[in-house]
Image (cartoon, rainbow, N blue to C red):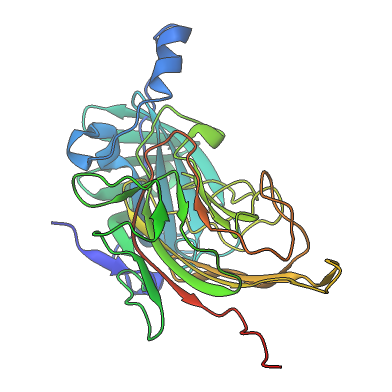
Amino acid sequence: MKSKTNLNSCCHRMMCVLATAAAVGLVTAHSQAFAQDTKQAFVDPKSAGVDFTLQGEYIGWVLTGSQDFRPIGLQVISLGGGKFEAVEYAGGLPGAGAIGKARVRIPGQRRGNTARFIHGPLQIDVGNDHAIFFQKSFDGVIAKLNRVHRVSPTMGAKPPEGAVALFDGGSTDFFKSAKVTESGLLMEGTETRYAYGSFRLHLEFRLPFMPFARGQGRANSGVYLQSRYEVQILDSFGLAGKNNECGGLYRYIEPATNMCLPPLSWQTYDIDLDAPTFDTTGNKTRNARLTVRHNGVLIHDNLEVKRKTGAGKPEGSMLLPTKLQNHGNPVRFRNIWLLDRTPKPSAG
């Protein structure tokens, strides 16, 4: 069993260097078959295939040209049919030591149970939970990275005093038209039965593995706060972190860090919404403010939200339910609780 590493762990404490190698498989099916593949979604790792076993995060130390060792992180993305992309970061992984944006992106191809990436004189082989770096100018191995499975520090967080457990694997009384899987997970496409103004929301979600899908068709859902402000849910593992990707305030503001983990990993959102205020004539007197932590990492810090996002409902004084969007992909949810912070009307 692979060990789990807390998101707060520092990259430089790892003993091996992560190099991500993923394999590129040529898609030879005709266009109709490919279109069908884009809808293919795995919800169980046991049936996800060989490519899934190579996709993931790797971390360790790499020997540099100045003969010293430096921390490095690598994310391996499965693109379907044995095709992969490896994304390298100086310093570690996003949210855990990575310095700046991705340093290099390398296409790769799977051969059997190993993925190989070639980038100039550098060769990376990924398999057996390791990524091995070979460099011609060094005439040998310059790094051996270990695969890691990061876990959010807020995973399994219990509701604080006064909070409402909206869904804990049992009753769906706090949601409308809710559906639950046989394993007790809440399905996408529901909304809270009651409306809340200002609140703290904790939820845990799991993206399906959709290797042939791209962009907005890859494990898409979203958390529509008050039905107005969408925090996007998407398989954007290893991507740039745009405003329409995971953690983005949809088509409005990008997350400070792309903290999306590999699909079929459980992830967390911890969201604080301060609702906008309106006068008696319906004019807005104060904008909403939003703080979001994705897998424990602050990605929006007391952000001023000046308008609704995407397909959200228009802003107004009427409180509306919070929705878990149905975009046709099997995103799953668990451990959802909410602490209502809506100011109570003053007496008299």
